[in-house]
Length: 165
Image (cartoon, rainbow, N blue to C red; front, side, top):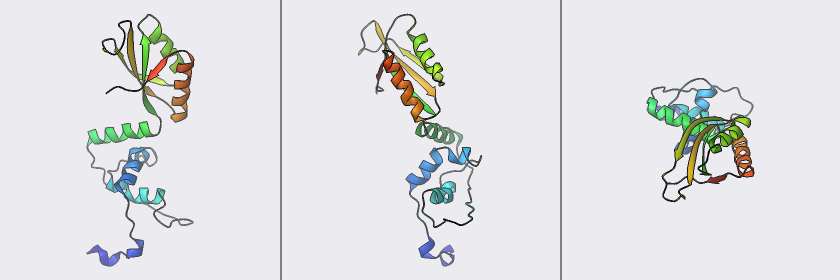
């Protein structure tokens, strides 16, 4: 029924990837202080990804559909924080001796990041009996800060390792 009102040359198709990317970056929440499900974010995603001829025009994009499951919303926000560099996990192989956790924490806090979770694994069979894995969840400003923290930890003699399965 609506097709008689839509000119085919003006119909814009957005990929699910673009819509999810735009939604997942947290832009619907941080830019407009509103919540939208994926399909409801389509007009803004189309505008931001250059899918519409909007240059020099005053434009309003309607955002709709706030009926999103809170668990899905939490995952979207978390993924958005990871994609924008505002949240990350680091895994460090440590010697299990007093003061190691304090040194790591001082480096991270000194660089302006916040430790939000700590997991200390002493039982991994791939480590020597006097070593452990330290997994940290961090809140950071951006990807640059994450790289600076990694560089400083490495410079101070800590060994960063990739996450294990």
